[in-house]
Image 1 (cartoon, rainbow, N blue to C red):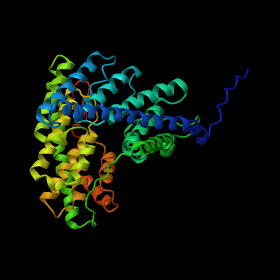
Image 2 (cartoon, rainbow, N blue to C red; image 1 turned 180 degrees about the vertical axis):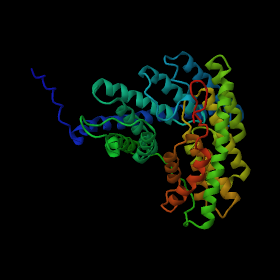
Image 3 (cartoon, rainbow, N blue to C red; image 1 turned 30 degrees about the vertical axis):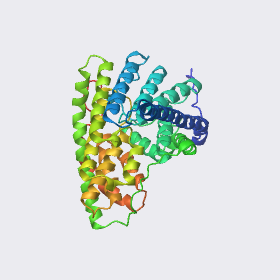
Image 4 (spheres, rainbow, N blue to C red; image 1 turned 90 degrees about the vertical axis):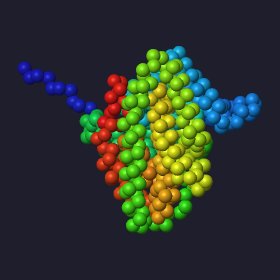
Length: 435
């Protein structure tokens, strides 16, 4: 008797038919990611105005006086500590152990995470919104995607949440595509996108995330366009001095930022010695207040608006003041992340790099400001993020000129050699730096 033939495999679905159902979810996730980012940012700005304008004016205290700065940052640390202690989910995992794109968190964690982030942004903590907002959008996209399209691959929803958020943060889908491309190269090989088909091409994998990133970026620009470009003097074209300066500046900036990276586990360990998150975060607020008193008002907050103010008149600050702001800002990032404040490290690191770049341009006038600032930001971000594409893209949009891109690509090489294989500004749960 002949054995029955095995059932025939289903005919392979065309890539277009497999990708088409993701278009609407990608649009929804992209728009939703931008709206969540905008909502948190607007709420933080309203609270910021109350804390730094309305209240000090009402009681007759200087808005940026040392006493008021200390009081607000200490109170912010106490408030965030209470959120981490009492709110369900404890505002997510220890921020020292998280990156920009991580596995999805449980949805119950998100309210506490967003509340802690809003308080940190409003209170002047030197962290940006990128990490917690990306984590929140990934968690929500993953939860909704698995609920309404359970047949979809889990990594699809992670990619959509990340892409929509990064597109909204930078106002362009390019940054999101670069981040996802980098993660695809370093991550596991993707399964076939279609039954019986070949492994997906790069563009098959980026199809839905690009839609989400574009929707997030467009929504962000329609509501409140992000501004990253700086009012720098026009770039007159690369010269030999610029080439040498680009190589040297990116290397120096990466080396300076690496000192902060090496110090990170020690700062984190010192705050972990305290037995309670309220104590560690309140102490973190006190230290941040002291650093702000040393570095000045521009070293507060995430640094984007402050960087624009610095670039509007860098000559108003001495070289010593600019270097001091660089050191204080990097120290503030260490303390904020090490003590448990929720936030990202990219935005404040960009400010630190810009301040260092203006100091270099003032010390060596033969290096044009656009070269000094963009290459300094490139070096700092390479050390802090360990993401080459993101660092290159962010540096390029600060002084958008096609002539700068070849210099930046060359300047990236020595900076990458300095940071590659060394500890990262991210720890394992055991407190060991990632490499």
